Image (cartoon, rainbow, N blue to C red):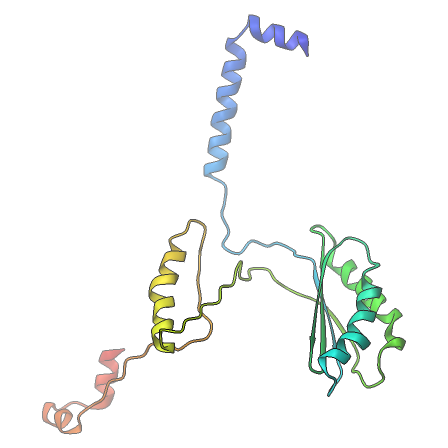
Length: 209
């Protein structure tokens, strides 16, 4: 290493030329780097769903979630476990570390659920273990609430103000609103006026389109 450093000090032209060439090649490679709107990223996420019709959330938590979570927690490469107890439904989302083969993750979770199957209540339906496809999904969700605007005004504010500002952020490709109301324009035709002009409602509809 010392010999290389000493040689570079005695012959500075070669290292400088090499540095310039690498810088140029790196710049060209960065400019030509392709950008994909929805890249193909395998995200190892597994869902366990157990249905017990008529069961209260507290019963679902104590009789199903805790037992399944205890069994699943012993699997390796788990990053996070999120559970949700609803009326008659237990849902467990198991997030594995990036790089974990999704097929192996599903098989491991299925085996873990099978180990505690006999400990679950008799009235449940057969547990469902499946992978969750999140490729190309939303990066973030925002909830908007107000006490001063109507539902129509709030929807228009989100579409006309919030959406435009989010689309102006570098890297944001698409913004969509869920809920609220959609703006519409109603065209009311006057039959007497149509007859006087000699046109039909179909012709008006074609022109509007």
